[in-house]
Length: 392
Ligand SMILES: NC(=O)c1ccc[n+]([C@@H]2O[C@H](COP(=O)([O-])OP(=O)(O)OC[C@H]3O[C@@H](n4cnc5c(N)ncnc54)[C@H](O)[C@@H]3O)[C@@H](O)[C@H]2O)c1
Image (cartoon, rainbow, N blue to C red; front, side, top):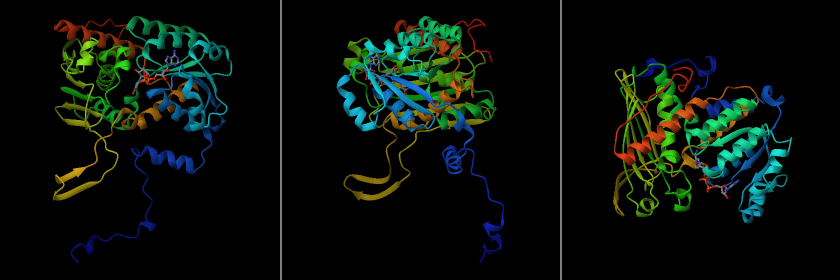
């Protein structure tokens, strides 16, 4: 009886609470259920997808699931996959081309945009050809193998007046973007320390690593991008210690274990803990700490079950599901949201959240990290006013 005094009137007679803003999936569902037709007058974007490997398959799913996009071409060099791909995804209307035939895409006035998910070494060529043909470009990171070539791509996009979007998917992850929003609102005050843990899973093949551009430009760029985006600031000093504990990775001159420390002009210190091979899943964490508190994006799990066992079969105590195994599952929401954002950019409904100067800055920092790792020296970075993003 003690709590009877807290009884409330029926929820049916009170005004209905709104769903929380954070539940973006439910809010999308409400739009679906209300059959909101505001954006259904928009043209359906016709797309060509270059590369249907690990990343390309994720974008293939996004394209097929979107009511605002239609896939018209797939370009890939593994012709033997095509019949199964066509059957599996019901791609009866899609034309398959090898890279040697890809000019057909650029010449086809029906194609509005190109998704580039082929190996990094092929990006620059595809991006430049697509832009010259006035196709909007969604490009997997990195846009090109170095800063100079990346700048050429953005100059071309600027000259032609066509969007070039670099797919830094973590910016579209609900947790990572929430950390950024809260930090930018000043919830932790001036950030004293920002950290990421980024441990890859599963271990990529050596064939992939050989043409990946190396851990700094292939993996670390994600962490550099998220840290500089959350802070809105660029480091002036960098120190990196790295090694290769996996002999096959050492043999190709790359690293699998990297510790980065960064100093920012305002006094913030950044740390990145990066590994190529986490055996317990795709360990991805972000933390911003300041005088008013800390905001953290922790690992996520496929389900929320917690089990408690007595002593049996070697398991005892509390147990939960493992963390997500790989980028394809952990960042699924981010991949979908970045694709939607790209469509909005092409339709002129949004400005790209990923700016060219930010991408060039990330490339410069990744190069400095590699230099520090290889020379054992602290590398200083100077930034001209024109290099820094406009809101610096
Ligand atoms: N954002 C992310 O989370 C993420 C994750 C993985 C990979 N990536 C990026 O995606 C790109 C591809 O990586 P992946 O792991 O999917 O590689 P992958 O090797 O799994 O797939 C690449 C595909 O491209 C095809 N291909 C090769 N040359 C081509 C060409 N000239 N034109 C068209 N297709 C071609 C290959 O046959 C293969 O099917 C890389 O740039 C990588 O950095 C991003």
